[in-house]
Image 1 (cartoon, rainbow, N blue to C red):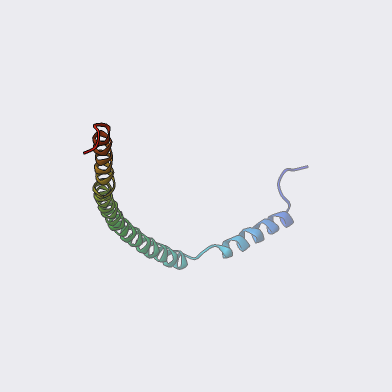
Image 2 (image 1 turned 60 degrees about the vertical axis):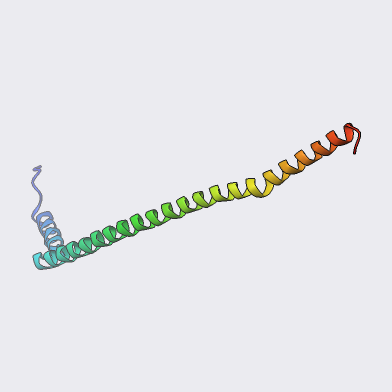
Length: 107
């Protein structure tokens, strides 16, 4: 008994190798496919750069909007103090004055 393959087995192996070789991509197809991939990657890189630029602009606009809202909120706090707290304080002072006058005996 020998470990060498029989001629029929060799023939089947050669047929299998031949069939596998015919399924391989030809060099021209490979280079065309590589060029297409390179072109697509270049387009994707340009898209990523554009998206980064747009994102940076959007973040700057958002920060400006937040800063503006913060400034406006500060204005709203001042308005609330002037419109709500000061009149309430004047009312309290006038009530205290009226109580003080009434406690001293009126006119």
